Image (cartoon, rainbow, N blue to C red):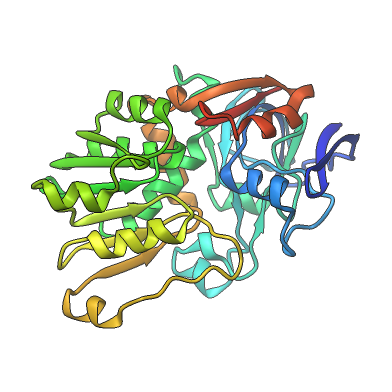
Length: 342
């Protein structure tokens, strides 16, 4: 099959790679669309980190169609349109046993350890099917929205790590990319009292307002600190969906006493942030990190897709043969999520 494999910084090549048979309990999928996640773009522009098994086919936000089932694979049929969680768990380590398969001790990740979605086909091992990490896409959800099921799952997982969203919550989302705009939709769906987003790109701010933000700040003009100081907005939940030290520090400083801060974005290795321990102690702050999502989160995300406007987050669409151009397009001023269609 044809696939785009990453070899080094800005070195992604179209080549033929073998496709394993589905094997007992597994399945083979034909890719329909795959989005360029922020982590994919970082590996392309900055060079892959040591955990990537090069050359690697990137891509873990995708929608696909079942084309072959291994012997004994149950619950699916050829022709089913599905999404697949990014984490292939071992199902036997302590985190897996406790329902935290997103941080499996022996995890394999699509697009990191095994070939991902920027290819014609994808192999799904039996243990992934057994873990419940493959979900059927609801009827009526188009491929654009379906490709972002994993984004929804990761945001659901993050909200779970900070205790969810209550009807009296005032929520600040720092970063208005696809992740931030997904958090916005989930917080609005769950009845948050007020939601303010902060970002630097005009198109994203317009989209945030259309998706239900009460205010979409232009961070180049008004920092969240300035807005909070002059308004009656007092966030008790801050979601940091921008991978900068300044954004993280701002979130920690702005959350009101008793509040929660979710640090969601992935940073470059070695990134550190000064932390005032007394502020955490005396203000009773809850600080949580979040990575990927569990199979349960992913299934819940698939069920929510008909109620969300995920397709509107896709700003650019490229054909498969122009996948490298798609990666470069992630730096366009109007880019939100860039999609490659097969």
